[in-house]
Image (cartoon, rainbow, N blue to C red; front, side):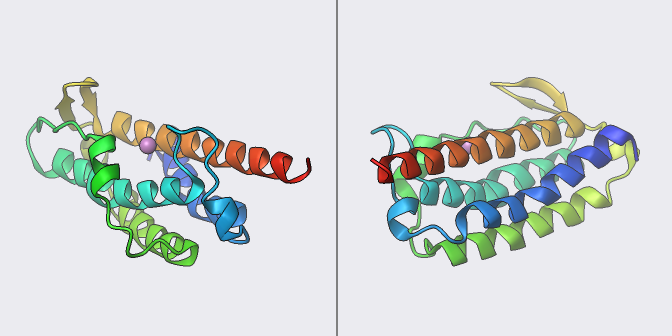
Length: 162
Ligand code: NI
């Protein structure tokens, strides 16, 4: 496996421990703290990461691996948000579900052959890209949401100290 591919996998492996470290000890109040009217809370970000892992990230990878240059459908996050199932929204449940879903994704990624990393797909927003580029996007998505959670925690703590 190339260095880039193993780095992508290693980075994806670190996300669950990072999320646990950041959020496991937060109160419900902190998890539900909303900084701006149009920004998600930490709990909502965790739910988004679980759902994206199941229905977007791994599903798209699976299609790229098994179909010939699939055309992937756009995902409407606002629609997802208005419809999402809130039945497993305890932080312990969200972290547990994310761990299971991420492990399933890593199980696929770890065994991809070189030829599979190079397989192609098309998406109206991203144009043509390879499985490897999709995994790069996946890593960026993790990074963006981890940074968002860190910002929310800092802002919550700053508010508490006033
Ligand atoms: Ni996102």
